[in-house]
Length: 150
Image (tube, rainbow, N blue to C red; front, side, top):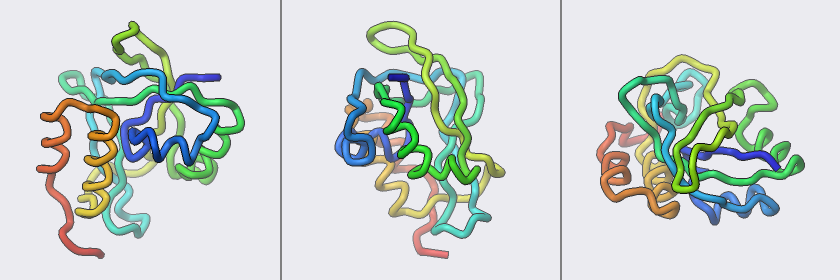
């Protein structure tokens, strides 16, 4: 089992239990020195996709899962890491149980662009399901987004 830090739609424990049924939620915490942003709009989806980038004054709420090797392969496929859209990177997290080293996904595309309103809503709902602080969820819901499809 390896620790995986989810910051996007995989924050939702119900969604993760469907995608990775053998990989339980362990804790939640913060990825400090990084910020949530969007990119990859050029790939043709209905807006930009969530990613994280280094930022010395920001932090991102995460859910930490213990992922089995088989579930990690399935998650790589789900997140398009097997095709190169996202790549894995190791990060250090602050949690209630102490510091944790985990892997997460980073979009391999240019930063910029707006997510669709529906995608941003799914992200905010996922953060809420993971018990993210209310101000973090509210900030997600206030972010600029595309109001219609491409």
